[in-house]
Image (cartoon, rainbow, N blue to C red; front, side):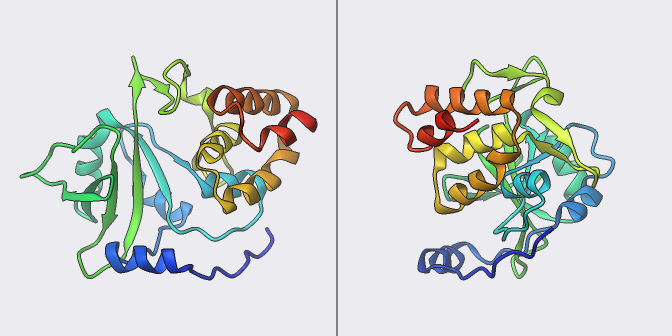
Length: 217
């Protein structure tokens, strides 16, 4: 892998950390060790999924673990002795513990850290399911077996497929997502490219990426 470029936090980044605290995310290997023995499915999305597929090193503000929302009790049982869990719904945080076991919303996230004096280590995104199958949070017609939308890398970690990862990134469309697209696109096969172009077109018919997605491949 190539070495990642040095990351320089923006004023917006600094303002975020001033409010919510610092991050020191686990590596995928550390997350794999943390989740060893977890009795349900889990996988990784976002920038780490991009890096695992492309081999191009990049800066990571966090690490995005995903589980099905029905498996939150199992997650609390599994990591509760290591981390405090905080349910994050739109920037509103509430401790997730025996006294407060319920999520604010099934689409919320769970942030993990050792204690209030420690940085955040894991961002856990909750994914819906339909009859035990993966259901896209962005398209409720996209239902698939988990093996169809994820893959297992040499490090033993399951990652979201690159074309699905890039669809989520297209919908956010940040500067770093443009960089990720440039690294991912040349490595996709024709089927993955067609899927991504069609999915972006359905979600955002005027998306600026479509000029490239339709014109290359």
